[in-house]
Image 1 (cartoon, rainbow, N blue to C red):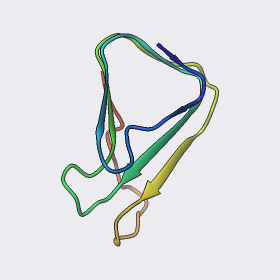
Image 2 (image 1 turned 90 degrees about the vertical axis):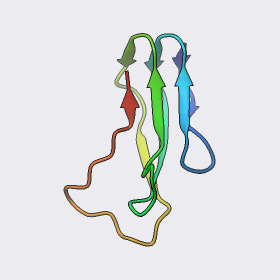
Image 3 (image 1 turned 90 degrees about the horizontal axis):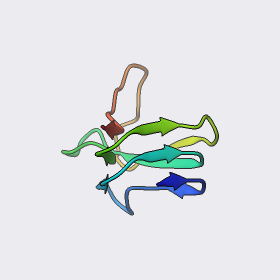
Length: 78
């Protein structure tokens, strides 16, 4: 699968599972909330994950706690 548009795991924190290869060639929208469990969207790819180097990653904080330098979120599981 090649994503040349927008990829977003959902309208709230969620997991998007791709049962094949994924080539990112577009924009990625990720939602996070440090107070929630799980704390962020996740894209699970069973095949090869490739970044084509095109597009942007946009992170939206859904929580009341501000994001800080050093915060880490796992966006992909491949």
